[in-house]
Length: 267
Image 1 (tube, rainbow, N blue to C red):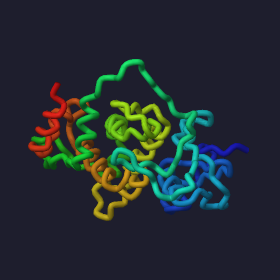
Image 2: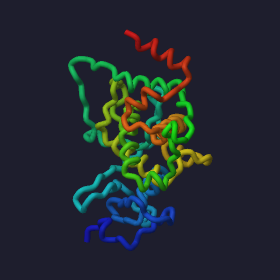
Image 3: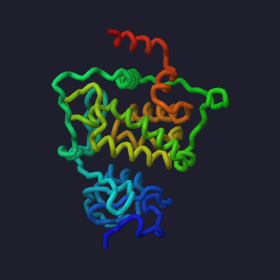
Image 4: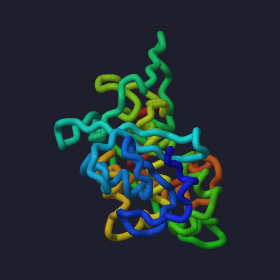
C-alpha cells in the first residue's frame, strides 16, 4: 500500500527529534514517514541513509497537498565532503540533476536588476540592517516561531522575501561559469531551499544565541551568509511593510557603504 501523510494521522511524532511532526517528509524508496521535514533533511546532510532502516535514501517527498500533489527532492551527494566556492558564496554539497535546471541564454545581455545588485553588495560588504525597535509608532513587532507557524500571512511574506533573496546566490540557479545578472529562481535547488527555510522558521528562533538556524543553513550558503540572511529576513518579517520595494526604500544601513554602492551603479 502506498504511504501517504493522510494515512497516518495518529503517528505524528518525529523519530529524530521526538517532537510533533509539523511538515511530514517521506524517504524514497523505503517509504518511512515518521519524520519532520526539517529533521530529515538535516539528517541527510550528514549521511544519506534512512534513520530507521539504514537503506540509501535517493529522494525526499515533502510539501504534501494530496496523494498525487507533492514535491520531490533528489538526494545526490558528491564524493568530496568539502563544498566548493564561487564568487565568495558557498555551494551546497547536494548536487541537483542537470535536467532539472532551466537555462535561459538570451541573445542580448539582460539589464542588471538594481535591487539584486544591492543585495549582493550587502553580502559582499557584510552589511547588516540597523535595528528598529518594536513599538506602535514604528510598526515593528518581534516574531517567534509559534507566531510564524500559525500565521499564513507571515509565511507568505517570508516566501516573497526568500524568493528574491535567493537570487543573490547565483550558484543556486546556474552552472559554474555562468554569472547572469538576475540569477532566476527557476532551479529546484532554490525551490527546495525555500521550503526548507520556511520549515526552519516554524520551529527555530532566528535570533537564538545558540545559532541553530545558522547551522541548518550553512551547508547551503555558508555560515556568514546564513547569519546575514537570517538577520535580514527577521528585519523584513518584523517590519510593517507588505511590499519589497517599500522595505528596500526604508531599510537603513551604514550611510558610507551605501553611498559607495550608489556611486558604483551610477550610469
